[in-house]
Amino acid sequence: MTIKLVCIGKTDKKELDTLIKIYKDRLQHYIKFELEIIPDLKKVKNLDENQQKTKEGELILSGLQNSDFVILLDENGKQFSSESFSEYIQKRMNTGLKRLIFVIGGPYGFSEELYNRADSKISLSKMTFSHQMVRLFFTEQLYRAFTILKNEPYHHR
Image (tube, rainbow, N blue to C red; front, side, top):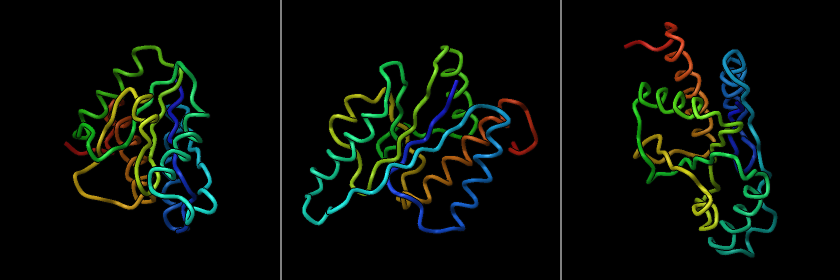
């Protein structure tokens, strides 16, 4: 199985990129992990929020396959503890999926079409974080999930 994190816009902080790369590299010991960055839209000043969400949604949807299990990282999604998130990942892996796709939306969230395509929504917190920070938090939590599944000492219970 491949786990892929799809994001809108590049990270403009080198420090965050460095930290994300550390966890991305660590994840390769457990699973094939990909990080896809969809470039920011051009000329967004001419677009309202819904138009921007729609265009971003089209770009995300164009990269999905029918067999993908798509999970939106959404403030209204289900929240997990680190342990229960690792169990959630294990259940998805047990189904024989080829690709598990997590999506971080743009600054205004997701288009209606993307919500309709999604198989699930999860929330990392009730707090609001920058989209760039969410990439780091998610990648670290995914790494933590695999260390929990392998009963490795990274996560302290």
